[in-house]
Structures are given as C-alpha cells and as structure tokens.
Length: 508
Ligand SMILES: Nc1ncnc2c1ncn2[C@@H]1O[C@H](COP(=O)(O)OP(=O)(O)OP(=O)(O)O)[C@@H](O)[C@H]1O
Ligand SMILES: [Mg+2]
Image (cartoon, rainbow, N blue to C red):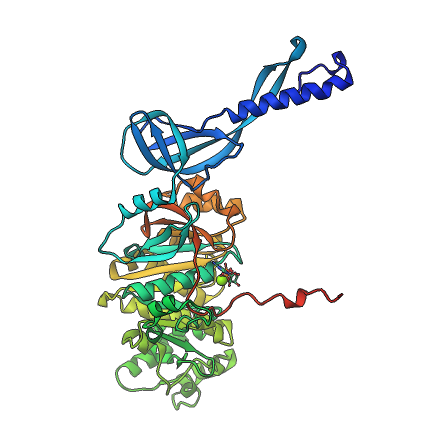
C-alpha cells in the first residue's frame, strides 16, 4: 500500500485506512473465481483465488462450461501479482497489490476450445473413472501406490512400458531404492519379465524375503516370487557365491583388468590375446589367472607377474571351481538375479563384475530374451566421466545397450541421485522417468531438457516432494505425467537408513 499520504491523515486514522485497504484487497482476491479458458482445446489457462486454494500442481481438475465438461491436469501453478488502485474514504485512494493463483494445464480428453469454464479439483471417483477408460486390459498393471492428489486412487504403471529404458533419479534419501524395490516386486509378481540387478549397496538382497510386518493378503500375492529371486553374493550363506572366470571375460575387459592398453602395451596385449585364443581352441593355457604365473610359457609368466603386482590375483571373484555368474546369465536358472556388488571387497572387483554382466548380456542379445537390467547408483557404472579403463568400457557398453539394446529386448532401468554424473547418452535414450525429490533446480532444468515430453511445470514440482513422492511419466504411464505417493513394500529392504538412536538426548 504505497500511495496513501500519511501526512494528511492522523496517525490514528492510518491504521483504519490500512485495515480498509486490506479488507478491500482480500475481497478482490476472494472474488477471483476459479475459471479456465482453452484456446486450442488441448491446453488451458486457469486463475483462482489464493484464499482457500484447492487446485494443485499435478492435480486433476474438472472444467465445467455451458457446452459441457472437460477433464484436465494442472501442470503449472504460481502466484501472480497485480497493482490496482482502490478508492478509500475521504476521497483518498491507494495502490494495492493483489495476488492470485494462475496456472496452466493439459486437457486429457478430446473436445473443443472453451472460455471461462468453472474449475474444480476432480473427485477421486472421477479420476479413477478416467484412468480406467485409458488402460490396456491386455497388460498387467503395476500398482506402486496412490495418486498424490486423488486419495485412494491407485497409481498403476503399464508394465508393457518397461520395454523402453527408464531413468529414476532423486536426491539422497528421497526414497529411490525403497521405491525401486517396490516396482521390482510388482514386476516380479505381475509379469514374467526377467530381471538382472546390479546392486552396489546390497539393497536388493532381501527382494526374495517377505517383511515381518506385511499384511497377510499382500504376502499371499507375493508367495510364489521368492523362489524366482537368486542372490549372487560374496557374503557367507548367499544363494550363490559371486564368482567369475577370467577366460570368460571378453578380451577388452581382460586387458583392462590387467592394466593393458591395446595400443600402448601392444606386445603384452597380443600375448594375452594369443593365450586366450589357444584356450578357446581347446588348448587351455589359461583357465584362471593364478595359472599364468606358474605357467611354463614365459609370456604367460610375465602376464602372471603383472596380475600379482596389480593385486588382481587376490580378488575373491575368481573361481575355477564354483559356478560362474556369467554361466547363469547364459543359461538362467532363476528369473531374477541380484548381483550383490556391495558384498565385494574392492571397487575394482565391483567394476569388473558390472562390466562382465553388461558385456555378457550384450553378447547374448541375439537370443532376444527380454530382460530388465537394473543399475542402481548408475553414476558409478555408466559414468559421465569414467575414472579408469574398466569403467570406460562399462560405460561404453551401457551406452550401446541404451542405444541399441531395446530391439534385442535389453531394457535398462537406471537409478541415480546425480543425473549429471550419468552418461548423457544413457539418460537421453530413456523414455520413462521416475523423478523423486530433487533440491537442485539446475538439475531439474537439465532433466526438463532431456525429458522434453514431460511438462516442465510438473518437473518443477520435484523440489517440494516429500519422502516417497514421485513424478512418473513416459510409456509406463501413458496417461501423461502423474504425481504419486509410493506405497508399502512387501519384501525386505537391504540397506534402509540406520536408525538415529545415537541422537537420543543423554540428559533426562
Ligand atoms: N515410501 C516409503 N515409505 C516408507 N519409508 C520409506 C519410503 N521411501 C523411503 N523410505 C525410507 O527412507 C529412507 C531413505 O530411502 P532410500 O534409501 O530409498 O533413499 P535413496 O533415495 O535411495 O537414498 P540414496 O540416494 O542415499 O541411496 C530409508 O530408510 C527407507 O526405508
Ligand atoms: Mg539408494
């Protein structure tokens, strides 16, 4: 309230003037009706009072006008200010700033343009009725929770949409791992899709075990699943020991493991290639790295010394005896394989196993057996800036799977807290998005650029998400982008947050 000339009114009167203008301002603001206009019949603009605002970004709305009613979703909602001149008492007037809500949205049914339709939040029944009419009855729905602004309406993903790559991101603690576990549970329970999980934090090792507090009816629906899940881990008592055989790796990975560059170390690299070719021809000079050093072949001995010096020989993943993970990938005995990278002692072993898994799945691509390849903490596996040769090769493989894997049935589901640290050629190939809370508007802006099919206004809501809230969009939710509250898991979480009992007050 800027233009009142305070010198002309007594101090006592000033308070009354201000109260008058506040009153008028509030009446103007409250008189802003929730009205929507569409000039193209596809999108709409809406305005509403901020007092008791019931419209929400991401929420569904019904727009009623003379010619009928339309169903839409608000994709953007902000407050807008305007200055209006208001007459006061005694001939004075004041410029008063009023605030109203203005927004934009998408119309989700077909129809004509309209002007000044009355807008109201859609009732849960209206939302579920609309969703029902859009689902494909021939495809399994994956119930992952509820729609955020339609309480009681289940959020259901189209399982068939997983035949595209999926990108999941959110900042640390936003609920990615919990939610991804939930989604995988649903995939296991509702479809027959094979799954291979690269699990760097041992978060999914409990996927085949039911939580103790689970509702018996939901447990029943999951009863058949545990037998489908096999954990390959270095932990004692694991279903399978996480082991590889050196000769099974492809030559690029073998060279990288031994720190050999095909150009700079061409002589040694050539020796390695010869040895492995001989092995392939049935003259097994190398059945394991440990045999290199003890070999009578001097070239093999040299490579063996290299392996000893690099510490590669001490890695626990090498096994001439136990079944190999790569054999399991070639001839699967379990529908879901959890590769417990977190159980391995060194980062190098984790990287080598991740690389071997991606390399093996790629080499088997012509079998055209659909498989969902889940990569948690993807910034470490398909890094935008790989830190060594094995990581570089792994990233190249992931980029290749992202670009060409889909037609062979290799579908990626990558999850990260740092979207900029995942190789852009992986992210840009993803047609599905699961976005959880992201505080950085810069990151949200980058994602908006990469996921241009998602309305930017919906993306901009990500910083205000709570735990377990997400935006889902893409082929897995063909009805547009939806705000979702993830539901409860049935299976055990491997790496839930450590309880903060240490923070209990020590003073009574
Ligand atoms: N929908 C949910 N309901 C109940 N608890 C949840 C939910 N989502 C996450 N949590 C809990 O919140 C904590 C953090 O979740 P989670 O580990 O999934 O986060 P994150 O995004 O994977 O974090 P980080 O990036 O650090 O791995 C965990 O203890 C988890 O059990
Ligand atoms: Mg996590």
